[in-house]
Every structure is written in C-alpha cells, then in structure tokens.
Image 1 (cartoon, rainbow, N blue to C red):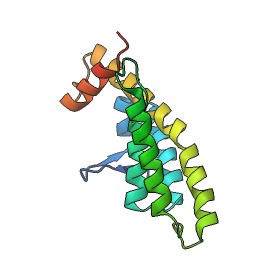
Image 2 (image 1 turned 120 degrees about the vertical axis):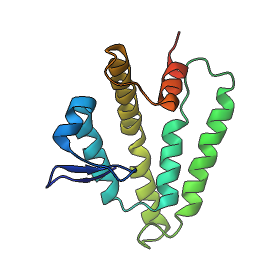
Image 3 (image 1 turned 180 degrees about the vertical axis):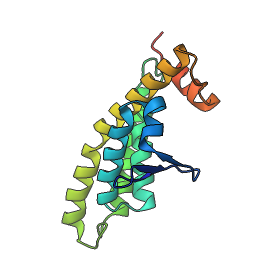
Length: 149
C-alpha cells in the first residue's frame, strides 16, 4: 500500500485508490497504524529484496502447535543472513557499519509489524463474526491455522 497522507488517499497493490475515510469503515483505526508504519518503511528506502526479507521474517514466527520450531528458527537465521549479505554496501552506499546500523533499525520494526498483523487478524475475525465481509480464502485459512484451539 502506498499512501498520500496530504490528500488522504491510499493506493493498494491492485491499483485501487481509496480515501482514508472509506477504509475506516472496514479497517477501523488500524488503517492509521498501517499508514504510519508504511511511511516509516518508505523513509528507510528499502530495496525490493530487503523488503521481501522483512516480510518473510514477519511471516516466519513461532506459532502454537508448531511441530518443528527448530526449522522455523533455522529459516529465520537464513533470511537474516541473506539480509546481511545483501547489504554489505548499505542501502545508500554508506558501507558495512552503516548497513549494520540500518539492519538493526530494520529488525527492530519486526515486533511492530507482527503486532499490526495480529491486529489485522483480529479485525478480520470481527468482520467475519459480524458477517460484514467474507475474507478471501487465503486469509480465512491463515486465520484458522493461527487459532490456538
């Protein structure tokens, strides 16, 4: 999602443009947290591979009922290694020390991103309970797979 806060417009990956007020009905105040997080990431000038790694790390979390948590941990370590290898020159050519600093700041964003994901799942659960909006099948499956019961 790309936002234009001055105009209150949000551009989604499918190209649709919604005004913030249109999003509030479905997303609630959560949309403001998403816009703020998105703006923070945009200021970090991430390249596609770095952004992809951060998204992957957000998805690779220990969940209730994991049969092989060690494999998840190994995968997380591999993704972090890829991030380190990708950024030896840094996002703006600042050198390895600059990249190490940048990487630390980036990894500090993960808990916030995971919290936003949980809030999104809660919002989807609410919409599903109220039968307001049927979630896409992939989101529905993800939601059901994360339930601890």
